Image 1 (cartoon, each protein chain N blue to C red):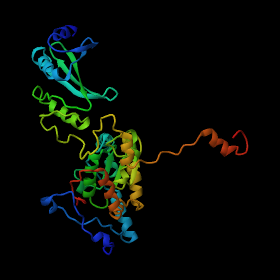
Image 2: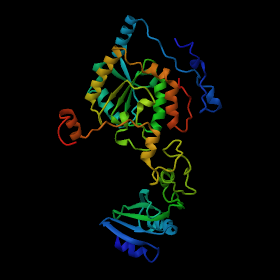
Image 3: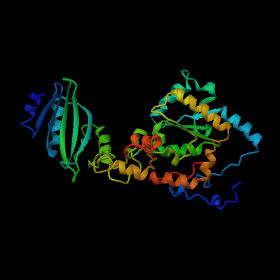
Image 4: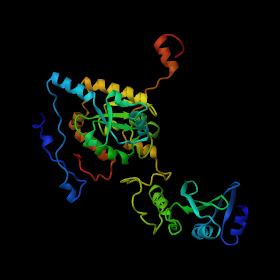
Length: 210
Length: 178
């Protein structure tokens, strides 16, 4: 679709890497994926919505809510939500509360390694506007300036029930074809990258981790 | 604890003894004798455990106050040793020969307050803040709010209205005092 777009043909500079590492990572940008015809896309979205794999990466205090949620007490498997061990095997990234600059670096790496289509659920008030850490020197205020967010669950902390309600809502959004975070990231790649590089001062990783 | 202070007074320049609780006391010592005092406390008075080691920024007085918190397992006493450093020349003797784990506290103090401990292992390496290029963030002249607003894309706050004026405008636009 966007192969004719000259911006997407440019190689990424990978300025943060030194010599042997520059050979190990690809230099191509993410490319937006055009949807199939409507009926096909509806079937796919139905399938996507009913098998959500949550990445096992707790990024803040909200990560404690994921343990009861995914295990026997609240058992999110009833809703087709299951844990998965690595970014490459998962499609839902739950940002568990506040993210410091140091964590954001890992969030960006993990998010970029996830396969399309990928969805981000941001949890807690810290991801919305910084929450109680709004004036902290190392906690970011808005996660949606660094990675695209499909759904916010407010609260400090939201209970596992709120997360279940959030997952139900996420499934509705996926079925309606409104969760296009990966395409949004690919289309606005330069904007996201500029925001990330503004606060991650020691950028020593590839520009696109795939 | 008072007896301990009386024992130490002829030997070291300790001042400002303050008994906080029956098992908790503080005393002050000039910078140059601090390491000697702490070594003496560890080797001869049984304060074998370094509970924590931190600093407080008293910007009004132009000092950093280091607090060495020591614990004696025999008597169950805890003793805080205060040492004042000038903010302009924030260099202190390292105590990593006494307790190895002090090197980690010193690394943190170097990064968060800019207090240097020459010779302490790894003191110049980053501790937590990756790629920090401002003044150390726990110094009180560092304006964390201004830094956050400058850096982290603050979301605009909720729109507020004065309830009285708002309701008057909504319900009685032509009545009442303006």
